[in-house]
Length: 621
Ligand SMILES: Nc1nc2c(ncn2[C@@H]2O[C@H](COP(=O)(O)OP(=O)(O)OP(=O)(O)O)[C@@H](O)[C@H]2O)c(=O)[nH]1
Ligand SMILES: [Mg+2]
Image (cartoon, rainbow, N blue to C red; front, side, top):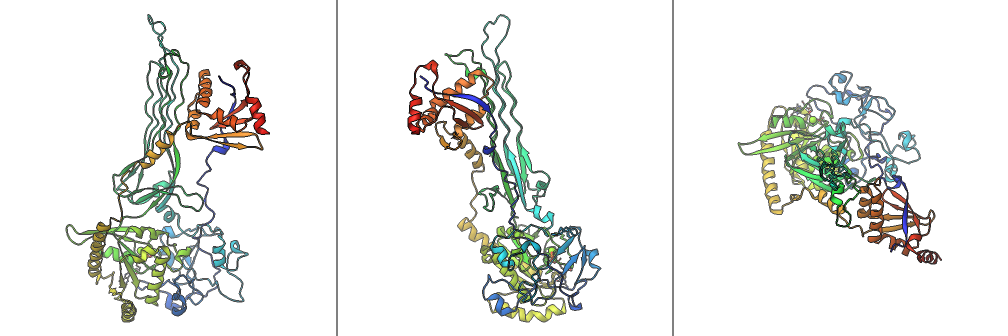
């Protein structure tokens, strides 16, 4: 005997139950280029280089103070002047013929004040005493950049060209298709009286798949398309015809894509999948189940059911995609060191090579063949500046591509001012990015040995490294001198690494690619009797939270009067009414289940006297 009932008052979508938009951009991003006021005089002629001459853009501290503590901030005030390009023009350094050499991507960087400007170096003085701070207005109130960073200063990701930002990261929205609705229909045929219920079930919603497309090498396509929705199932029809299945959606990603749940604020989401091999396909979200038509509700007790279900809503989520290139060997080094030249010398790849820093904005891949069956994939990465971990230059975000590399080739510009310091600064940046990177086997290639200024520095450099147990190679990438030795040595290192990895099985295959879909299914099949009740005493509202019961509400088609009865029955059967009464629900209180808002009525006169009201009052006391 029912002693209480919930009367339907309104059906409203609850704004509070809607997930927050996870795309809301995080305001805290420490990878920004500061815009220093140009207080340096133009570069002396010694720094202006042309043709094949090399330039060092790494600003280095006095040796002793800087490297005692690897995390010590590198002081920049002893540095030579900054290179600053204003409106595509070099205000120091290279002279006006620079604009002709600038690639399109470098033009038109957005700067904080909207001018077109790119800052290629970070040489502003944070330490200058007695001088006014050079920090831009956003950083007012902070002593210096360091304090600003510590207090979680607010950076905008500017200065990094969009193409670079979008190349290896993307945020996408995926939604599985909703199931089609079931229908109420009855068979009407001549000579067949009382034909019985014949409403068909709705079709299943389309699934969302992720598939590795071997021909893709970046996540750039996601710049244009962010939302991926699978089709909804068709509704059922009369004559017991079930609806058609919704169309699946297949999201193609590049090999090496790591899929995470979208980040929540600063916290990175959990890694869901690592998609490495071309052709791999993962079922990410299963489509919603089709609603049942009235034919499915026929029972011995109810032979003419006038009830049908809505289709189940398809699951939805935001994903963070991150591309980590799948290369065996990564070439790292300061800007303009000759990394791309080396790649072009050892492989058939044709990366852009030019005598200015940051020619390479996106990593290039090349295949190096030593023999018929001995090949390795080599990645040439953008140049790395000291201070990159704070966003100087292009930042060091792209270094994640080296995480999957087994071996690194560190190219040092031999014609630079201080190759040893350049070497140390880049190593430090690698370490700051990830200590694991520093542990990777690497070899050092001292480049541009064909230039006299490099040749002069070779012996000192060699000695400096040999004292630390490193045996550098000297090469001229441009003339292909010594490059073969570098290839052979890196191949040897690679083989050793691969063997070691085979033993340890460092990268276990994520065997079940469909585990996300399995989890979604599991969550959805939760029993209706697993729920939680939350009481908001100030508004006399009771929230009933439980995946099973919320799904039941969502699939209930309130157009049919029998639905309400079935729902009341379900609430009683799974113990919601009982728990509510136990917790002291009162006449007129609001009860919310999923998107349904109802008013509680203590007793129904038709069902005879009830003591529930008394109980409620007592419990309130
Ligand atoms: N003389 C000489 N010049 C070289 C050599 N290797 C590279 N260069 C020159 O150095 C300049 C920079 O070469 P890139 O290969 O673009 O340097 P990179 O390290 O890829 O530079 P970014 O991509 O900007 O970081 C170009 O003008 C090359 O011609 C070399 O062995 N000898
Ligand atoms: Mg390059």
